Image (tube, rainbow, N blue to C red):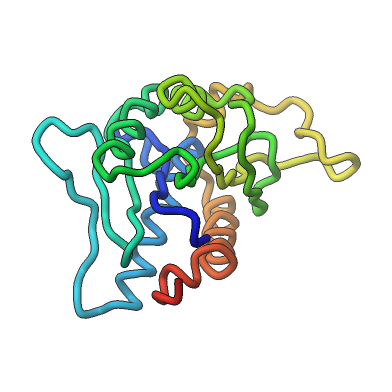
Length: 194
């Protein structure tokens, strides 16, 4: 994780979308801020805007920066570009946290230099940065059929599903995977060991 400087939790900023599947990246970002706050009780950490007119908020986790775009999901690229410029970071130092409907809920994958695969937030980032050369932490949000790990039959179309409210059972699964991500990916950062 030492090559990363900026983490971006994708999501729609409006309150009505806060607990939807499409906001899994932002929910993970909130989880990490809460975890960091518990480990460092001398100060309460929360997102803040860097200056008037900026389209993102951020919080510093030690020497790392966690960013939340204040744009709609489909315009995330402008906020990510602004954050990279503001913090003088390169795309290769970026890890984007986002939902992925092709990964089973309860799982996550880290990848780089890949296409958007239909995710409009990631697509916007690729267009704005002019490169796919950044890292992504993809959080599974869909239930898969047991036989071949393909999406369940008769499921809601992805465009409609991602904007539905996360069910209570699925929130428990996501909370569990967020904890695993905290332990497996962010432990050194949260404990200032990196």
